[in-house]
Image (cartoon, rainbow, N blue to C red; front, side, top):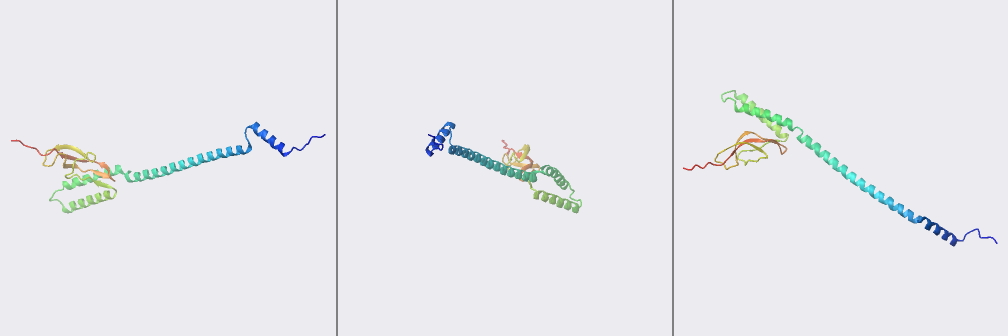
Length: 185
């Protein structure tokens, strides 16, 4: 008798099952594992993309902020130099002779005022010192003297101080009060 050359469907299923057990995996499980690995890699890539995008956005913001600060404060040294010129204008006005040419004095005052106006438009502001409490962040004490004012109050200004957009450009040089002197008889 001849053996049956065509295996029955039951025999084929048993052979496939035996082969799958021999390799340790089945075709559907291998596909599931590969899919899970790919999904994991995709999530990692998406997270990396989001992280890099956020970093790039932060970089752009930081670069813009630095550029604005450079524009705002980049001319600090020039402004400090111009303050010396303004000081000389004010000294010239202080030492102008009262009986001198009034037109010259008036012209110097106008130029000085125009100079101050241009500096103010660029963010340079004079520090107020009259009757103010001494502030070491804005003032530089060059001495102390007794006065009728309370201790720590500015009595006299030797050199005007300025800020540039709220940052100290040059401190005011001032004399501060030690308070009233009490004389005992």
